[in-house]
Image (cartoon, rainbow, N blue to C red; front, side, top):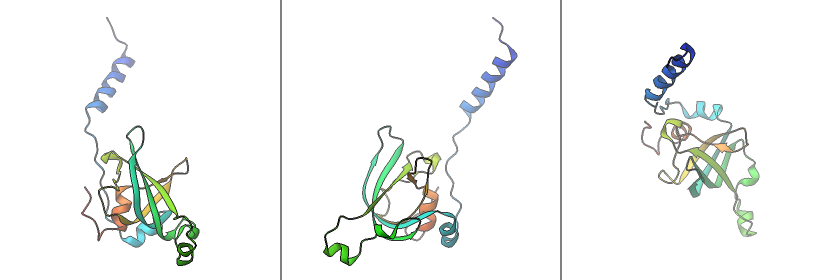
Length: 145
């Protein structure tokens, strides 16, 4: 049986990509100020709960907002007055990839209070990466891979 050159070429390309090693995430060390300028949403938060999504591809983490740096409404911050009135605590949900190659960050294993930097994806969800988290909290964390 003869294969057309187009099919043979497609099979060769597929084999090359299938055998290529997966690239691990590498984070460039950046100054806090530079990360702050480049990251659209930054807040001081405390991990309340973290879990995997139903497909096991993303960590979904809820944070109690302690302070807003930028990109989030100040109304999310707890004030002494809101505590006295017993208003519900404000929270933000952030997703992060599980796969190390996608620079995901597991909030369950790291410090529980962090400065979180995130971007909004096409669905409007906040997405955080290990590189941003590390660069905003470098004094709290070990050097990323």
